[in-house]
Length: 375
Image (tube, rainbow, N blue to C red; front, side, top):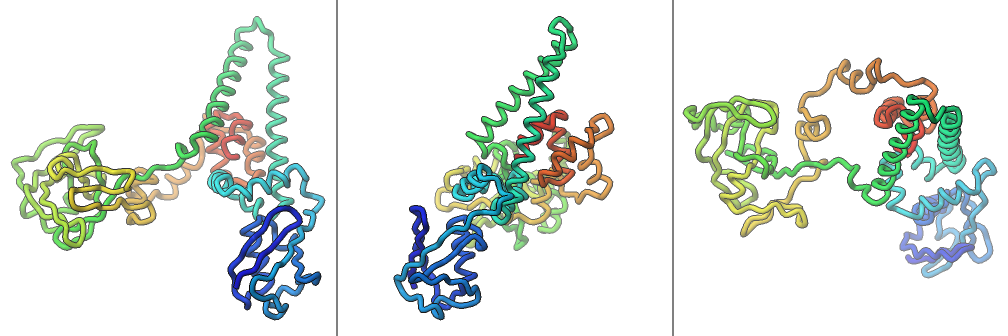
């Protein structure tokens, strides 16, 4: 059935729901629509408050096309009014909320469910920035303008300010540039063996690993006269060439391909420029597909990739890092150690220690800039 929910403001919500929906479920639905927490909602129907959460709309005799009025209770006093306005603005802007969830998930959760914690976290961020500004002004006041070291510190401070301004502009106008870009993969089959092929127009030849060629039954066709060394970013040993094999890209779409068999830890199968040109394939990013004259083969999203390829995309290697390597990645070297008070300032904002250290490393030890990166 359809009901209409009005508010003290100008907001109106038309909801298609079941008459058996409980009041607590209706409040949860309204939270998603309005951003108002369930415990701050007071619902009224024909002048009577719907305050029994387990009761259904039918039990309250709410029928088709009826109107329910929602009053919003004032948030707890611990939530600063200015910060609550900020919180409501975040909740009403899906794009801003999504961006906040990617940069600071803890703050996003507080915005959704805990107004008091949201206010406290934002206040901490503001205090951190103010402290950094005071520290910077004191540094400038104590510096002798004729001292070479003082001039160098001022120059470094100006450089960091320019970097921070450039970063803020990029985050505001080009937030997509901070997202990880997954390379282009397609599903293929060779001799009934399912594979994921990396489409790479920057690779001169189509390449297959010896292990993959063996699993597809192609090593018996290896022509070792074409062995050698492949040189590019690094070097790898070429075992030979497989001159022709059928590759299936969809139910009734086959391509005749040749492969260079190369040792290494790269992708199991790389669809290179030679086959792209031979079959007149086009990388169409609007369609998000590898297009041929009669067929479009969609590229795979990151979550559709096998675990091995996902590790390649995230870590640059298909090997699972051991605990020692994880520690090396997580902790900066002794020459890059940062004051514990700066780390604590960032972790108090709701981020992990690893994220705080990484932000300080990117900000070259500047806690103000690190806080801006995280927020």
